[in-house]
Image (tube, rainbow, N blue to C red; front, side):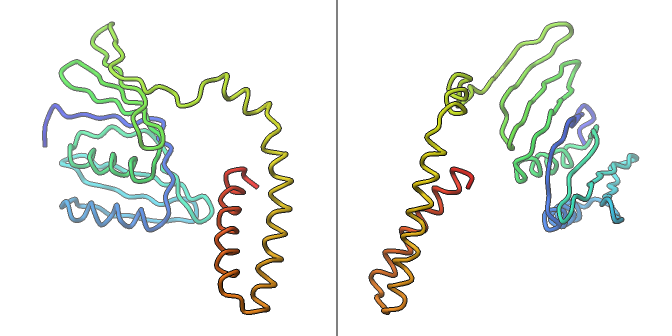
Length: 198
């Protein structure tokens, strides 16, 4: 273990299903960690022994899924790598502070991707990296004011009804060519409906 290695994970917003927690337990065991876990109606707890320290990862149960809760200070490099893999795999959000030689590097992660990287040394801080937003505020305002989505939604429903009637008729007549063509059109319409959140 690297003595100077220290990483703090704050504001974690990671959502899991049971399989992902089981994969994490498997990875921890493969890395040689001594651990145990327990589960109640409300939470899943994994306790990991790292040297003389015991790290307890808490997962709050939300229906059939889980959400990690709490802030964690990790002084074990391999464990840090596994947590970062988890952030990436779940496309989660976090603020990660790497502390090394009186210097702190802060990573803001959204959807598993670093959007901002800041280096803090004493009273000074400098932005090393900042991801440019894909959408400007003006574009967002225009999108909210636009009525195109609502207008398209009405037409889309008519197109969907028509295409379903075409498919029904083709199925009744065993018209394979029309069935295939109609199914392809329905897949396209479904994709558009998902984009419009219908």
